[in-house]
Image (spheres, helix red, strand yellow):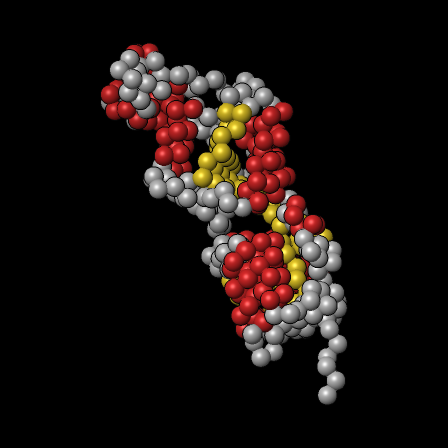
Length: 343
């Protein structure tokens, strides 16, 4: 938004000119009653002077735009979340704006500036971390937000949606145990991410339940991308006593692990079984079709958008964290381990 000189005027600039806080300007914009009349009049004059666009009042039907903000977009994982969010938004007559913040050279705060200009209905955040400063500015702008798959423990002040990662890790590992595997490796995601830790804990829990030792040499960490799955699988397969099965913490890592196995002349699943996590659309068309844990990515995007609309209408959510179920999808990349070679 610009004033008569063509210069963009932000809510922060208006607050500075009025000598009040950003949250006070936000209260005036949203018709809140807890603002002194003199202050309200001064802010209203400046809003009119700069032709600042007025947001629709809370409680009306969803309209306008919602923002979907990712750290990065170079993953089919992100596409599935966007697909689910856009289906719900489109049905409500609401547009979506998709942004990636960490892949750009400009400061990450730019997405907040753009959000303010657009007067967005709310934000679906799929980022590693929502900083205290970002959260404070969203609150000052009176813009609701939902976090999908938070990196750490869910912030009790910000609604979030996740998946049953522990149960998924346990199901994947138990499937391999039931096939007869005893040397089962895991290529987890980043060690600091909550979902990675939960999948790893599920893996360990399944081994413990079957009375199998958890060999530290069989535990590796990647970054959820194809190359890390390839590199870590290559290292696992070079061990003196290599695994007969690998549970990869993402489908992309599983695809990389398959490539590492093929380069060494191993057949999947005859010589090595591999399980992924996510159930991306390409998993069923992979060769061989990938056994994987279905993470309801599109449903996470859909639910996040529906909850965002509820917050935008001023409703109170029953819970601040929702965890959707995962499901093991058995295809052709897993089989019993090869029979031991005869002496």
